[in-house]
Image 1: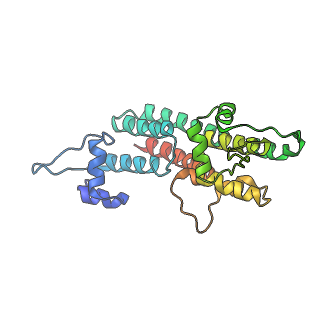
Image 2: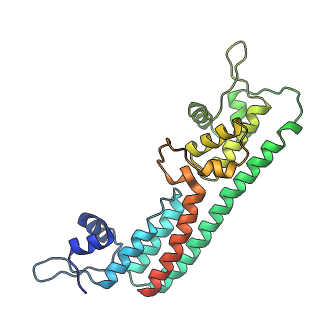
Image 3: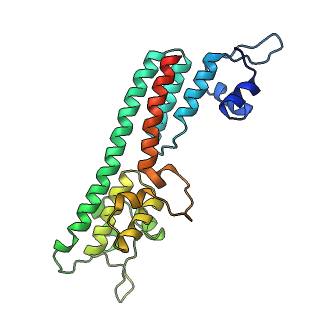
Length: 242
């Protein structure tokens, strides 16, 4: 079978310009032209496009994982299917590691919450600069978390922020979850659930509300990682068939 640009684009559900863009980016095998200069695609191009669309279906936020997926596509486009298959196996392992990291962050969060009541009640207060140093983050990051409503910090009589043990706990939770690639929106959702007494934090952080706009994969990160793992398995099957 041979296909025109519009025909193969329709088969995979994209605009013809998207197919041309993939070609320009080196994500497709060489596309021959007929005597009139029109592109001619075959079944190998079709499988490569299906591989490409499967790889890009999960919008994983990590640039490292994204670059791995692009590398797999380019190796397959160059005809190195064995190398592409091995790279996909590694990609799948990295996705599993990322999911374990995400779930470990939830376990640590639960541990912090459960141990909060065992802390010394003696008041300890820090300023913003000291707090940023304790957490190993910049003051700008701390400001960003406050602006996004992740934490509300009490002030002393002079109007200076006072970070106490309660705030330290909450900030540690935020830092752990951000380091595990959860989005600000999903963390805010989980913290609101925590404030209302909810303890099923894994479900809360991964389940957007009905009126909530999902703007990135990390708004439901564990679900996105599960989908990406399934896609990686499908990618391996496609590569084997090329």
